[in-house]
Length: 289
Length: 327
Image (cartoon, each protein chain N blue to C red):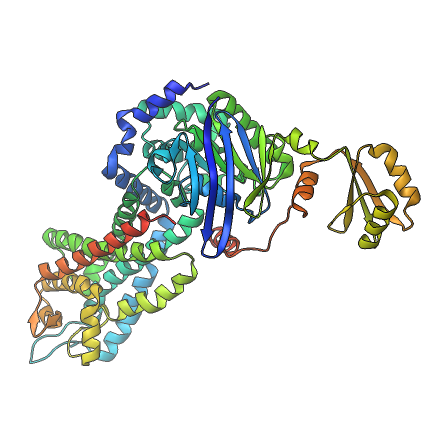
């Protein structure tokens, strides 16, 4: 039988500052997500099907009807449509993985492991941050896996470009995961999930520049695309990936008031958006009914 | 003995709805305390307040001497929790689940390893330590959750319907593990249930109905509230039979589920008289010692009932189907 004295030492150990404090707790939540992801490799494979459909069927189909000179103007060489949407498909994979991953929180909170975390003596901020980083890591990997297709769409990769893409993809994954976690933290049932799908995720995807350039659009649509945080995540990925392979990609770049935004500024916008969303999620998690 | 849980005038409102309407109770260190009542009586709400998952609307609750509203983190460090639905991570192994719990609760590495081995032994899962939890049966999951609940040496282990959805034999086993753990660890068990037979395992029981405590005492005390024996009879016309019994014997029977229940001091001699003198045909009749079901019926005026599926139940089933379908 355990004595009361033993119990007291348990509470007052240096580890009483549980699991190594906030960072330790974030690490635990993140680690759990990564282990799960790694164990569920079948899902990883299955989730590549959709991007492949877009790239191979949608891309090839549209490329054929547009002709090879997509985006060619003023005598400059064009970009094949398949090549154009390659970064868009990577981003789509990131977007869907981020949002779907975050939505699992809703179920997990009522009936799953999340309750174990919610009653644990850890700061709930750690749950929000850990889930966001865990989701972002998975989404980033889901996006980066698609880089193996680069040679087939005429994109050449160098270590420097890959490194840059890793960073930019993570920034996008972080922004979207934080948004997903923030949304999930306010949702009480899975019914809200359909709403998020139809009124947020799909519009975000269509208005992000993943499937067509965000230039020369009607003004209402131009405004919407510029308000879409995902646009600023996809644009730098495209410019980096295609630009380094010599494609004239600058003419697709997002411009605001006729000025093209530097990649660093775009990444900063997504990062800032992610941090705001994370703050919202942290607040929601810390609240008790 | 000192009180490890103290609750005074506890109230929880959801808007207009009063789920808990002024509960007072006190639980001693080392006790097995049962919270007995139908679904929707306020059991889970009360337990959620004690576990710091919900805030009380009014009243006080102290667990391990700490106010649940003022210092939830300190309370959480001193309690363990076994939920109604499994909250294990089923993509992790049994050991990994315990490992994760130990880390979250700050159990130091060397102690953690030893403690995990020890508890896996107690709940007889040592040989399955490396298996993914998704391969476990309902009973195995529950055992693992109980082991996890006490891993960090909590003063109180809260169990919300710990045997819900398990077959009778498995339920019996769970109780064996719980009493073994209680002896070993000296942990206080605070549990909710709507199985009357399980309440018999408790040192004391609070019968809760519609957000208030209808009775509190040891199972024997509560059963003592029914004077003598219980006769249950099934007849075609329940109201007519009830009138006859009242007229002829001066006893007010309780009607429930198409049967009549009569409390009498000496059932063995009353039963033949009843059968002889009641003018209408009786389809079945039984004589029994009072059970907690009878106590519940007497105190609340209705049988312990199962209510229609709530939104949460529906979501739970949906989730089960969805998860089930994926593997």
